Image (cartoon, rainbow, N blue to C red; front, side, top):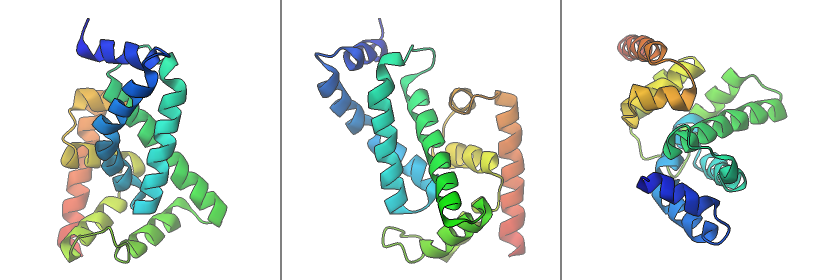
Length: 180
């Protein structure tokens, strides 16, 4: 039995769940925070989504079958929670997802947690100009260096489609950065 499968058993055992879950938080909270932050852009929203992600993980860990890696499952939940958050926010504000993306980008410079300069802001605008799937693929590959095989598990799509999405995203970002 691997370390991961032993860890999953500890997470699913009522006697060790609390301790194992605290370990899980320590192992993944920072990586998941940055993954979520790249999607929602705002620090406060990222904190909210991260909390929702871990609540969902805690409530559903007993149903985890181990058919994918634990971190792939966590990333899938975090990704879905991020997208759900963005959609709910847009609906609540009665604006389109595009308008919400623009609002988030415009408020990024006012975010005390954003330490980027003008070039990083331009890169964020370029990424935001991509369709949602290309944004996810680009962020996961470029910033998180996630392998296509793992990304395929997280996003539930083929490696070939992900490679094509990443290639197209890179070309679009290059075009955006050189033309603006």
